[in-house]
Image (cartoon, rainbow, N blue to C red; front, side, top):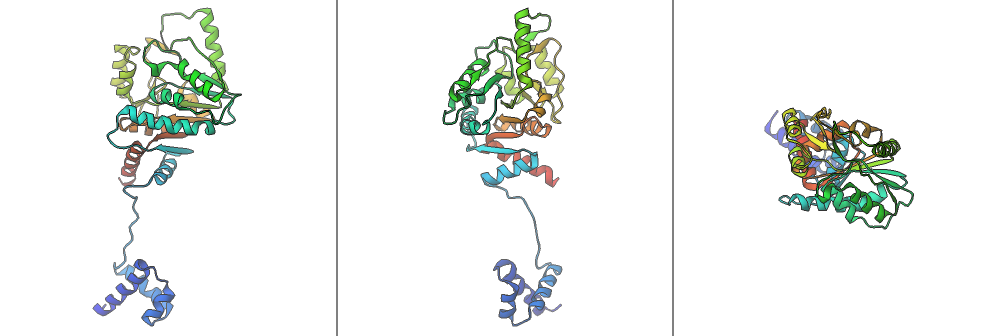
Length: 321
């Protein structure tokens, strides 16, 4: 093919692909038939003058990020709170908590029984709720027992009380410990309360909980986790934690340390709860979020934009490998 012919192909392709002209418009400017234009475009592709490349954008906007994560992680909804790189964990938790507080009343509308977890983001969310939408017929139930720690983020009854108060619902309080040494028997009263709690778990319409990375969890539960348990979790290579239950990167659960019993909603049963909402963020939690999402532990994710971009980058690398 002569240089003149190649130049003609380039000129036609430029008008069609770059300038957005129709084939009819090109046929008029080039004084050729529309069928000739079509054949020249085919030849331009065959000659390598026109090359197509389909790539993911390097910096998707928030709406695109939400849609991408929903599709790739098979989630029903993703909500992103604005955040910036370099923020402290507390500032990130505050941003996510504010977004969750704004959305949760609407998301829980119609629910009669809602289970709540603990953690910093959950605690901040509970105190950020507004009572514009109320759930007066809803019972809020702890998904985990009480902590002996002085850490306010682990006071499950405080979280329950705050959410129920702001949304005008009812509270189910617990005095059962989250962690109990296996050789310590329960009293008759505690057994009754435990049965009542289990009955409440059987009828949950929704569950709202946080998620932790293993290292951060150890710092939070320093008073609760024994050295033996810590060594057990670290040596096993757990990826993350929900309601003080640990799981691997493939989502499978880490067998519990035999030295203690944990009173918490079983992760395996989360898939049966109609609405499961995870509110968590921070770059160190990206791997734990991916594993939990793929395991189906939640259907709705409320996180921050920085964490979302890290999730996006990890998923993108997997796609192109």
